[in-house]
Length: 192
Image (cartoon, rainbow, N blue to C red; front, top):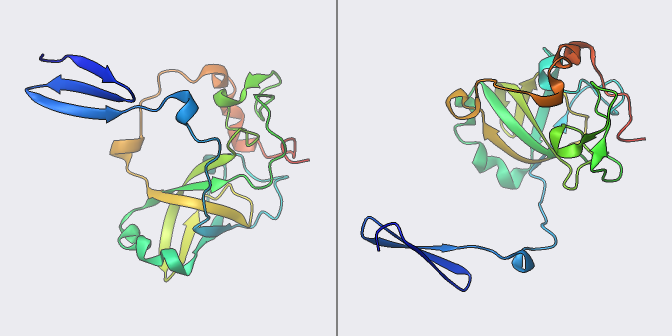
């Protein structure tokens, strides 16, 4: 029975190195139709609306902002000041309707939304890796901010290069377009 798997209903039993491991797998009809998240804070930046906002943190160099963490989540900040960068996970609260095909900022052709960073996604969730400058109580001072003021923060995680950095192998349609990033700004196409 070494390395053998047996499915029993929604559970899969795997025998490995003399041990039995049970894994629960969901069927499509068991997956929730809706998942609800609560914001843990608010991101503040100099950008009052999307128009003119940098489209990635690397093109928002030296732009400062803050993250206000709600009081009930402050204990979760313990030890975060030990990291130079953090990953902000947030809700694209200003994006318009969902579109599975979009014309992204740095190209003139339609692409599937999952091959872009466009905000008009089925689940409008954004991520940005920013520099953590300092922590003061429930306020995080951040730099390289490409996020609109008032954006709801869903989560934050430490950026760890050993976990998060990958060697570039291929970048799809962005090959030949990525050099446009430093000058590209939001033109309102996903919010107007």
